[in-house]
Image 1 (tube, rainbow, N blue to C red):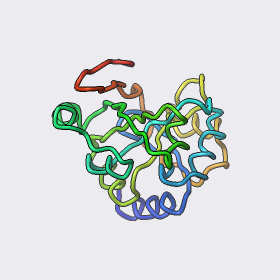
Image 2: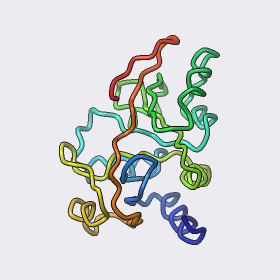
Image 3: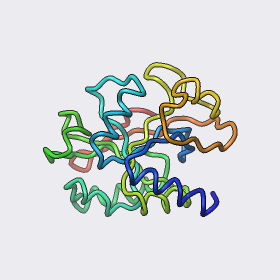
Image 4: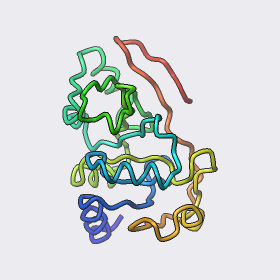
Length: 184
Protein backbone atom coordinates (compact mmCIF):
# COMPACT_ATOMS: atom_id res chain seq x y z
CA UNK A 1 0.00 0.00 0.00
CA UNK A 2 1.25 3.50 -0.77
CA UNK A 3 2.66 5.66 2.04
CA UNK A 4 0.22 8.66 1.72
CA UNK A 5 -2.76 6.30 1.85
CA UNK A 6 -1.36 4.56 4.92
CA UNK A 7 -0.65 7.89 6.67
CA UNK A 8 -4.21 9.12 6.08
CA UNK A 9 -5.63 5.78 7.22
CA UNK A 10 -3.40 5.84 10.29
CA UNK A 11 -4.61 9.31 11.27
CA UNK A 12 -8.28 8.39 10.88
CA UNK A 13 -7.89 5.20 12.92
CA UNK A 14 -5.94 6.91 15.71
CA UNK A 15 -8.66 9.58 15.91
CA UNK A 16 -11.32 6.89 16.54
CA UNK A 17 -12.46 6.47 12.93
CA UNK A 18 -13.63 3.22 11.37
CA UNK A 19 -12.90 1.82 7.95
CA UNK A 20 -13.23 -1.16 5.68
CA UNK A 21 -9.94 -2.42 4.34
CA UNK A 22 -8.15 -5.62 3.43
CA UNK A 23 -6.57 -7.53 6.28
CA UNK A 24 -4.31 -10.53 5.93
CA UNK A 25 -7.37 -12.75 5.44
CA UNK A 26 -10.48 -10.91 4.15
CA UNK A 27 -11.95 -7.40 4.19
CA UNK A 28 -12.35 -6.21 7.76
CA UNK A 29 -14.17 -3.45 9.59
CA UNK A 30 -11.32 -1.86 11.52
CA UNK A 31 -11.14 0.55 14.42
CA UNK A 32 -9.04 1.22 17.50
CA UNK A 33 -9.23 -1.54 20.09
CA UNK A 34 -8.28 1.03 22.72
CA UNK A 35 -11.25 3.34 22.04
CA UNK A 36 -14.48 2.23 23.78
CA UNK A 37 -16.71 4.42 21.58
CA UNK A 38 -15.15 3.03 18.40
CA UNK A 39 -15.62 -0.55 19.59
CA UNK A 40 -19.25 0.16 20.53
CA UNK A 41 -19.89 1.68 17.09
CA UNK A 42 -18.40 -1.39 15.37
CA UNK A 43 -20.72 -3.67 17.35
CA UNK A 44 -23.67 -1.54 16.23
CA UNK A 45 -22.57 -1.34 12.57
CA UNK A 46 -22.00 -5.09 12.37
CA UNK A 47 -25.24 -5.86 14.23
CA UNK A 48 -23.02 -8.15 16.30
CA UNK A 49 -24.05 -10.06 19.39
CA UNK A 50 -22.72 -7.88 22.20
CA UNK A 51 -21.67 -10.93 24.22
CA UNK A 52 -19.14 -12.03 21.59
CA UNK A 53 -15.63 -10.53 21.78
CA UNK A 54 -13.92 -9.19 18.65
CA UNK A 55 -10.55 -10.24 17.22
CA UNK A 56 -7.74 -7.76 17.88
CA UNK A 57 -4.93 -7.25 15.36
CA UNK A 58 -1.55 -6.36 16.87
CA UNK A 59 1.66 -5.02 15.34
CA UNK A 60 4.00 -7.11 17.51
CA UNK A 61 3.75 -9.73 20.23
CA UNK A 62 4.82 -7.11 22.77
CA UNK A 63 1.44 -5.39 22.18
CA UNK A 64 -0.06 -8.11 24.40
CA UNK A 65 1.40 -6.20 27.37
CA UNK A 66 -1.04 -3.34 26.62
CA UNK A 67 -3.80 -5.78 27.62
CA UNK A 68 -2.00 -6.97 30.76
CA UNK A 69 -1.04 -10.25 29.09
CA UNK A 70 2.38 -11.66 29.93
CA UNK A 71 2.58 -15.12 28.36
CA UNK A 72 4.66 -17.73 30.13
CA UNK A 73 7.55 -19.44 28.27
CA UNK A 74 5.45 -22.30 26.84
CA UNK A 75 2.84 -19.93 25.45
CA UNK A 76 5.54 -17.66 24.00
CA UNK A 77 6.99 -20.63 22.09
CA UNK A 78 3.53 -21.49 20.74
CA UNK A 79 2.88 -17.88 19.70
CA UNK A 80 6.15 -17.90 17.72
CA UNK A 81 4.97 -21.05 15.96
CA UNK A 82 1.79 -19.36 14.66
CA UNK A 83 2.80 -15.69 14.38
CA UNK A 84 3.05 -13.78 12.21
CA UNK A 85 0.31 -15.55 10.28
CA UNK A 86 -3.38 -16.11 9.68
CA UNK A 87 -4.07 -17.60 13.10
CA UNK A 88 -6.01 -15.73 15.77
CA UNK A 89 -5.11 -16.93 19.24
CA UNK A 90 -7.37 -16.67 22.27
CA UNK A 91 -5.53 -15.72 25.44
CA UNK A 92 -6.66 -14.93 28.95
CA UNK A 93 -7.31 -11.19 29.48
CA UNK A 94 -8.59 -10.53 32.98
CA UNK A 95 -8.09 -6.76 33.03
CA UNK A 96 -11.38 -5.09 34.00
CA UNK A 97 -10.58 -2.02 31.92
CA UNK A 98 -10.90 -4.23 28.81
CA UNK A 99 -14.36 -5.61 29.68
CA UNK A 100 -15.70 -3.58 26.73
CA UNK A 101 -13.53 -5.84 24.54
CA UNK A 102 -13.69 -9.25 26.22
CA UNK A 103 -17.39 -8.80 27.10
CA UNK A 104 -16.96 -10.65 30.40
CA UNK A 105 -15.36 -13.70 28.79
CA UNK A 106 -12.00 -12.61 30.24
CA UNK A 107 -10.32 -13.83 27.05
CA UNK A 108 -9.44 -12.07 23.80
CA UNK A 109 -8.41 -13.34 20.37
CA UNK A 110 -5.28 -11.70 18.95
CA UNK A 111 -3.64 -11.97 15.53
CA UNK A 112 -0.23 -10.78 14.42
CA UNK A 113 -0.63 -10.55 10.63
CA UNK A 114 2.12 -11.67 8.29
CA UNK A 115 1.33 -8.90 5.80
CA UNK A 116 4.14 -6.34 6.20
CA UNK A 117 2.20 -3.14 5.36
CA UNK A 118 -0.57 -4.13 7.80
CA UNK A 119 1.90 -4.77 10.63
CA UNK A 120 3.54 -1.43 9.85
CA UNK A 121 0.13 0.27 10.10
CA UNK A 122 -0.62 -1.50 13.40
CA UNK A 123 2.66 -0.33 14.90
CA UNK A 124 1.54 3.25 14.19
CA UNK A 125 -2.15 2.96 15.11
CA UNK A 126 -1.92 0.54 17.99
CA UNK A 127 -4.13 -2.56 18.24
CA UNK A 128 -7.22 -2.61 16.02
CA UNK A 129 -10.39 -4.65 16.31
CA UNK A 130 -10.97 -6.32 12.98
CA UNK A 131 -14.19 -8.27 12.51
CA UNK A 132 -15.10 -9.25 8.97
CA UNK A 133 -16.83 -6.57 6.88
CA UNK A 134 -20.42 -7.79 7.05
CA UNK A 135 -23.41 -7.92 9.33
CA UNK A 136 -23.28 -10.82 11.75
CA UNK A 137 -24.58 -13.99 10.13
CA UNK A 138 -24.21 -12.62 6.59
CA UNK A 139 -21.49 -13.41 4.04
CA UNK A 140 -18.21 -11.49 4.40
CA UNK A 141 -17.73 -8.76 1.80
CA UNK A 142 -15.63 -9.93 -1.16
CA UNK A 143 -15.44 -6.44 -2.67
CA UNK A 144 -15.74 -2.86 -1.51
CA UNK A 145 -19.15 -2.66 -3.21
CA UNK A 146 -20.28 -5.62 -1.07
CA UNK A 147 -19.05 -3.79 2.04
CA UNK A 148 -20.83 -0.59 1.00
CA UNK A 149 -24.10 -2.53 0.80
CA UNK A 150 -23.66 -3.28 4.51
CA UNK A 151 -22.26 0.02 5.79
CA UNK A 152 -22.82 2.67 3.07
CA UNK A 153 -21.65 6.06 4.38
CA UNK A 154 -21.73 5.10 8.06
CA UNK A 155 -17.96 4.62 8.21
CA UNK A 156 -15.00 6.90 7.57
CA UNK A 157 -13.12 5.20 4.73
CA UNK A 158 -12.94 2.27 2.34
CA UNK A 159 -9.69 0.88 0.90
CA UNK A 160 -10.25 -1.08 -2.28
CA UNK A 161 -7.98 -4.06 -2.93
CA UNK A 162 -10.17 -5.65 -5.59
CA UNK A 163 -11.95 -8.92 -5.01
CA UNK A 164 -10.66 -10.83 -2.00
CA UNK A 165 -11.63 -14.47 -1.84
CA UNK A 166 -10.18 -15.55 1.46
CA UNK A 167 -11.23 -17.25 4.64
CA UNK A 168 -11.52 -15.91 8.15
CA UNK A 169 -8.48 -16.63 10.30
CA UNK A 170 -7.92 -19.94 12.00
CA UNK A 171 -8.96 -19.58 15.65
CA UNK A 172 -7.17 -21.43 18.42
CA UNK A 173 -7.12 -21.19 22.19
CA UNK A 174 -3.96 -21.58 24.23
CA UNK A 175 -4.47 -22.46 27.87
CA UNK A 176 -1.70 -23.79 30.11
CA UNK A 177 0.37 -24.74 27.06
CA UNK A 178 -2.46 -26.71 25.44
CA UNK A 179 -3.88 -25.81 22.02
CA UNK A 180 -7.56 -26.16 21.18
CA UNK A 181 -8.61 -25.47 17.56
CA UNK A 182 -11.96 -23.64 17.49
CA UNK A 183 -12.07 -22.74 13.77
CA UNK A 184 -9.93 -24.18 11.00
